[in-house]
Image (cartoon, rainbow, N blue to C red):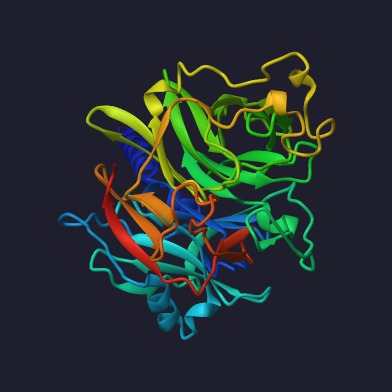
Length: 421
């Protein structure tokens, strides 16, 4: 009986320990040695995932920021970039803002920045709380883990700059991580790889163990009139349709593509389904999904066409945008190296209808704050929708050192809470 009682107690103890174990238990204390903070995303238990493009590595960091707010949160900070620079002891024109996200547990905002403009710039993570107080989230001694990407493009730090967005960084390495999201035990990472399908989506199991190659993505770019495999996903959101998980991915010039998560296989290739074409001459900056009045929507901020919204309820039934003729079926980056080389194969816009949110201008980053609100980083001198037209204000961009490009640090940026449109 004594042995039986001891056995029952042991089983109970082990079961309780297993039940109480969390994802943060896989993280080990120490300094998180970031070389850059390109992208950030939150997972469960207040875990912050940081994409370090220069090091081609994803960090998982326990923030221990898990206390829910006691009331409604409305965070507004004028000239937030100037206030961050002052906190870090640098001039505002020496600060680059790379990404922003909201901790869904605490509703605190986290911002990834570069302290400096050159290759030796230091990565910094900031926290902005419900009282709009800005503080540095220190990385000297945090529980963390690392996942090194195995198929990152070559680092060419001496590469020059090139268009189409003006002064952008031509170093392929800084395009390793364009966006990230946590989904059901996996960290999804979009960017470039060194494979023949350079456009890549990596699905990394968490807690981190072995990291495999990503999945190459091919998609029909309606505004360019060709299949493409080199253009990387710029921003994406996970979305479920009829209990099947997809990634809704946006690319430059500006198609939105549906990619089944189940087809993201290590070293594999996948054909995405283009469901929206938002028009050429623009780059998506951020995306979010939300529900309002019982309907589901996708919101996309872009450089030259403003903030656009379309119905997510139509994602499952949307007609595929593809080659309009058999001749167009052969159009790709090899046969048509210049976008739009086959005009008969192109369309300017199409697919699911969208609307431009006229009240949202100059939006650089955005993140969902709660079920009815979002936070945005917006240029105080707003860019007009269809900014490519004569006389319109275009976003002032410069080469990023952690990402492809970023907003000119001489621009005044406000952090604002807005109602989801």
